[in-house]
Length: 287
Length: 341
Image (cartoon, rainbow over all chains, first blue to last red; front, side, top):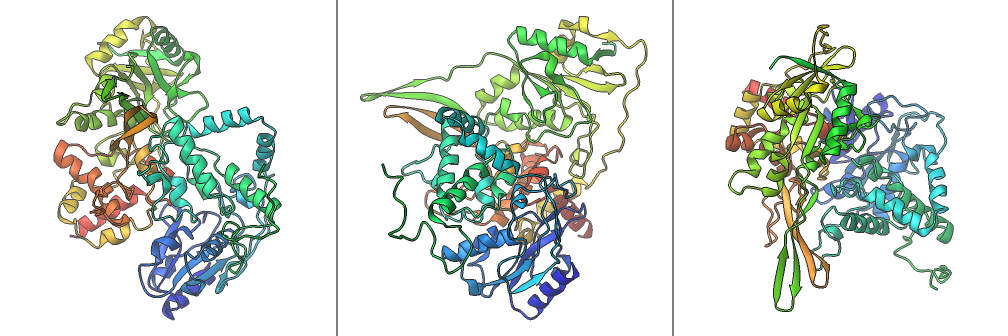
């Protein structure tokens, strides 16, 4: 921990970044996103099992606000969002100062301790405990053991459903939606200045949180994530109605990987799946 | 009326009778953490020590989306149709004081200049059975917003938990009194003198509301606002789970080429579109301004206009916030600034 604070202090003292987006702890020991602008602020930085937020979502918020680099504390999984934003030309690598943290898993229920049962789904299949690249690195890497990836089991179950059963399943889930757009707002890849949900000429999606309006919103958001979701599971974590949104986004990521050998957010130089064309791309979905 | 008591089992029987009379009964079924329509009286749970549900029950009075009217285009004319009215009265059972007390608060805005029939029809035909609360966590602050775990505001009947699964039942309004009279066979005199289940921990007063209000009156422009809401991502989780947030949008939606509906939908001040004008100008053009609006509406403007705090201290907005932005801490910070000034 001191290592993280010291690293961040140095970055701000030496003006390597204008500010650093990281995590602090409040008086109730809740870990939350926090911005340090001075070396003194950096004293407040923490990193532990409760640092769940993917802070990359703040890059789009701050990128045009000032001269100088944005410092950001990232876990291995969150770095994929940073990489994806660079790949999608939303930010330049040179405009970021990346402070990587080795992660030993983060909690699902924030008011409980981290345990093999209380972890985010993404931790159960995590392959990036150490960020792939960084300007500085802090925290020790620790091994941890988690319960089985039960989302995978649920995905397999849904795959076996008939089209009607799948529709029933998703209708039931999406009817819970209250259109608070927490899924969109926490998503680092949802950076559109005007979301399709807010376009009214023409109105592509009913703004009402009715069965029709909610189904349209959630499926269109899922389509827009095809081959773009980096799997931070923030949308599902933020959803107050407990809609299992990442069943869709994760599944599409798996299809992108199996059909096109592509995983988003893995290399800043790699052309994106949606933004590139290869003559060897499969066309067997066109029937 | 003499103090009557009722057992949980007998309450379930009342629910069963209510269902037979075509009431919509809203409560928290056993094993759930959500207010929902109860369809089987035996499933009702009454747990004063349970944590607040993740959403309030406002959706039963002010739905997330409801039609105001339907329209049908007929060549050159347009026919309008009223939505089908749900004539069933709503009975909410086991409402926490921080939920029940929200209804009379929002009723004021729905009856200010325009009388909102959609809300009023439901509210006027409702019966709210509140229940004392024995829960406390770091997010609870009902005492600081002039409430308490025993606050009967908004309840027609108020239950206080006694030992051995009994509740004492007090009629708060004439409506509540006639409810108890109607079902008096299920109530009994407290001959055994059951003890009240005491709270394990009191809920402290976290801030002095009057001081906070005075600070807000004088600090629309203050550097505090530059950082108070800067981590807010601008979703509406807080507003939509809140028992007192009542903003709505009105939209026309086409269902087919010549039919559609005008709908009243939940809206929220943290959305960037909320105040955006047709010209493109947005008077609240950043999240910091929008967050100032949220706090000011709750703790200043609503009081200025309606004499009520637009917050019952339930803590839901903070429990569910994706970035753990805690309204209590923000208001505590204001309280600290107020004490300094």
